[in-house]
Image (cartoon, rainbow, N blue to C red):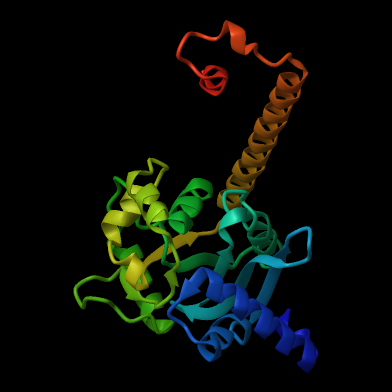
Length: 274
């Protein structure tokens, strides 16, 4: 919790976190980053740090909850920023902490409306959200209701997210540009994971730092189903790892193939690969 830190510890957090951020994103200076992520004006802010075995910072997730009055009712808006070095991606690092914060807040305020609002700047972020949350707006194959679209426009404007084009409610100027290699961009262009191609169609300028305004109501049922999917994904991933290790161990016990029995003209390496 940044507000609870001593000045020296907060300065260390700012320096370390921005150094990591600069290896993942470009397009934002340190002062803007600190104001947006660490010195957020949200009523609640938590930052989770992820470190490798050597203690070096490899990823982070900042979760903010803003409490605002909408239509005469106190409403909570969850926002967040996250970044993970390339070698740690794909392990669902941040979903658990996000769910924990939301569940704790819901438990403390069971009757309060709660929404997630993002301005997502990368297909991976939208894909992860669509994977774990049922009712994401906008989404593939369903027209966003006018009432929901109006709420998104209101919230996007309230949080100072300017439109890229006046006629487009959903694409906003964020400025954070993910540092992707050419191979990364090619991967996303052909990726068939749910939501990815939809995101690319809706936000083709994401590489320029454009964000897709995304809303998801976070009811108890939605959060519970999301947590169940997250746990199932972790179990499946762990099972695949164990199977791969078992296969590797069995392969290590087998005698090396004889080069004498190889097909004429085929190298021992090509034979093993088959």
